[in-house]
Image (cartoon, rainbow, N blue to C red; front, side, top):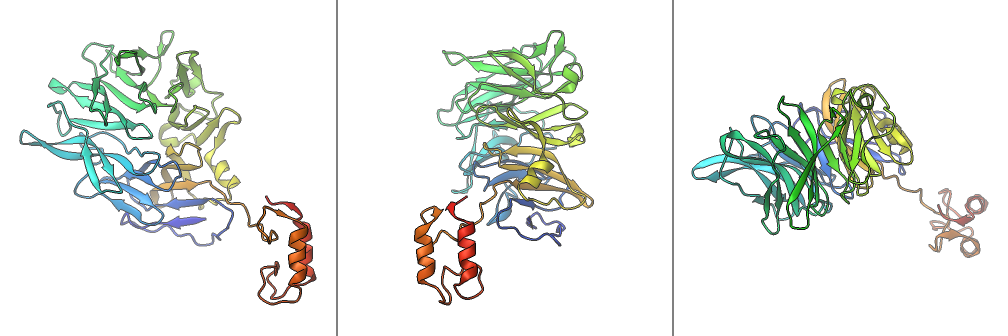
Length: 418
């Protein structure tokens, strides 16, 4: 099923010819808006965060897209960051202008959707162009936030912030006076991943792990002489870090790293181009990814059990019909169970943020008349007691009365409900 939200003040994408299916998943295309991206979602997939060239926004089925106009500063024009969402769908990350010593500059901020309250993460007094700091990753409870902050002389550096205690950690750089950035953080804040520029400007994958004294030790990821590209996401339990592939290693395969195993390619490349890891679940057994620039090589869900599965296959298996000419080529975030996937789709008319809900519902067990979870003798007795009546729940074929066809339906459903 396809639903269209027009709250992004753009052209509608028609759902003509797509019939609703009670047991199918759903695909929502949020509107034809250039440079609009759905970044992350809540655990149940009901709340989605994203941004376009005007503002950050959030989306629910009930509200459609709610733009935070006039208050949030989207990425671009010397401002970084991305939208992150807590598991409960209440807190999202964004950037807002904050006055410090008479200067309004962008700072990483958490927005409480329920309370309509903005809470800046604070600054250390420096800025570069329009920004003091930005949020690139956040734990599922919103306590731990990571990203990039500016030091003196436009020296960009990775940071960690505990939003409850106020703790701020400069994560540093293993290349003197070269920038670094933190992209993601584990649920306990103990494992952080991102990148560190080397002396020729290559963004090498980096991992920071917390020590017993609260400090962090940085490891830059390499396969012998081949430096790996940036680390993009970390599993909730902190065990696995996933990163962007590089042609000099396993043909550009998406990679993973753990303290126990070191560096590994993630399966066999499903397509040409380098693999981009964009989101993973709590234990690292599911990874959302795409291959090639802007997903030109396809979008996939990798699982430990099944390897790489195209998003189009996942959609089809959930009964979702993707409109002709459209591709879910740029996935950017997912729920921890992998059943809601968000990102930006491309079609014949342009691009649109999308929300793919793979949560299929089971068909109703209408023959279970007593509601005990199975069809058996009590249900047959109920049907027989209502034989010939009109408007009864035992009218299983919906023809207006209870009769022989209803017995046939009940007997065919005999046993435990699906």
